[in-house]
Image 1: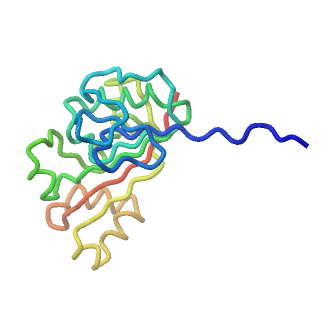
Image 2 (image 1 turned 120 degrees about the vertical axis):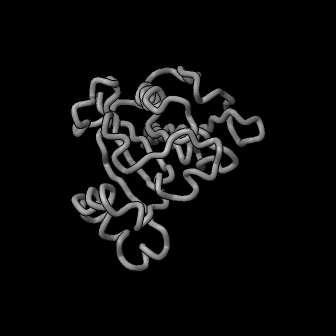
Length: 184
């Protein structure tokens, strides 16, 4: 009995891959000393790929460097297949690392990407690119993680809102990880 072709592998784009390109991904970066497969300026859309080319896009510590967050998210939306996933990681704006790198243009919090979802606070008209938030994971500085604040912030959405509004300059954040699904 002859079997058909195996499952089609996922196509993953690692944006701003640097030296640590995600295994099996196509890496893009502007730095010729990186492990990129394709060199391109991440501030100039469109990237050199056809629309709906990727099942997943990874942008690890990239979005805080781009000149236009909305344009970058729109480009990610264009490149993802329907239902494709976007993984973003970025510093929380209360972390020292958000401000100590002079190439950081944006200082973000856990609600910074709400414009792209259903809970856009009345500002959804900025873009047609829509994403559904799958998960948000915050990492806090070690003391606060040890005292249980990180668990509370990640487990209870209302506590995260309280933390962002009133506590984050005392109980400081470290980094954030987001997973989104493209909404067509």
